[in-house]
Length: 307
Image 1 (cartoon, rainbow, N blue to C red):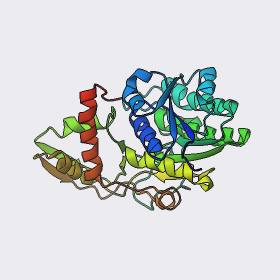
Image 2 (cartoon, one colour):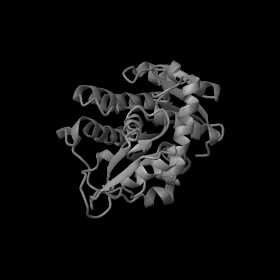
Image 3 (cartoon, rainbow, N blue to C red):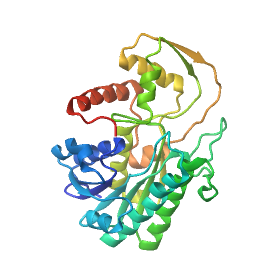
């Protein structure tokens, strides 16, 4: 799909990743409709050209109306809160919310969807071969992996199931460890951690991905019609938490001491299919973190903090 002058609706547009999605789509030439419960949370995007339509994930009629006239929908809204382990809350937002989005997409006559899933759908293992797009996933129905991961696995499975039912074309992306401006999950805790004069950091391998790279992958998926029906790992590079910590210190200009805690294990990912087919690229940590810090400073001036 050539996105020039196409209309793309984005659920959860006022959230951390949502803002990056909107900007990447605008840059690709699309008219962007932000479908959100509280438009006031991202008025800065309205000034940049995003049209907002108000709809709650539980309101199919409002969602259907919000999607009317769209050429594609990015199903991004979900519950991800590191402190919220409630099964009911996660199930309602992630599983029921996805069902409502897809039924509304079909009712509005839209055919193309990109679904934001998560690397958390996999059955995690330490060491061994890298995860790829065909690696075994959790059984969400049995609540494997906890409330968030299980309901996101159910969400992705449902997205493809409803796509088959309604003749929709869905691409799913599976990112991991997303960081970026206006983050309320990971970045605030890292800021507190890095205020310490001495920071102990494990060398455990885990992929972190810059939100801007995930947003660009959504654009790449929409531009490649052949990506429909597929799931892609867009999880980040095969680096360690210690690598990320060193980059944080450099980007922030900090002078604290980092002490590595040797851990010769972790998880590895294979993002090569996403790189080939939808243009996924990993921004170097230092660059991504500098952009994050600069953007957070601008948001603070605007009074538009963490989502």
